[in-house]
Image (cartoon, rainbow, N blue to C red):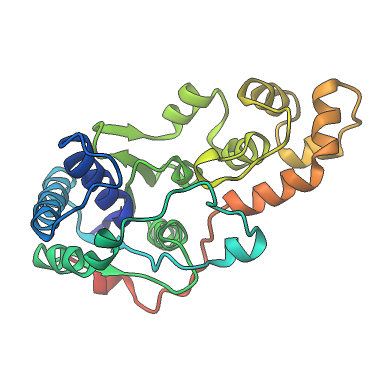
Length: 262
């Protein structure tokens, strides 16, 4: 039997529903008090959302990747990583076990790995499953996962009901899918406070990658144009950004695929 693996970015799913139900729906500011009754509703809504995903995608295996919200290897490499983000609401953090329990009631295991983000855990899962000729659906609105897309792996935006595959990357960013991490290395990733190269925006990055194919080729080119001079001046930033945006695919999971079978 072939594998169809639903890999869920747990906190991405939880936070989207939390924000929609607690603040947008109630028109409350971030500082408004959230009650335990509010959190019960969020847990139930998130459980229902995952149940809908299971029904829609009919996976044979599934897992929810969570994370500790502590310092990871990226913070050690770049202390300002995610420094632009607001703190996670304490009520939400203290309620995470309730979500884990709710997911388990659907037969879906949640797990996390110290010092790694859910992104790296899911990237590793996707790599392992695709190597075993399985299909992977990554449930997340985080576009960092687009670097994993191939004939076996897609990213699915659960809230927009949008399938993000190689054709999507080409249409959205005007680059080939395998150029995506180089694109982010040049333009940065604002959501994670990764700066990229100063003076290089999306249009410039697309032009550079169209002309030179990869970041390595761009950096090795003679800096004769204005854009190439900017990249040459920001060489260290480009290389560090590339390292930060590239997901790990070799995290030691401590489990085998059988443990995630539904």
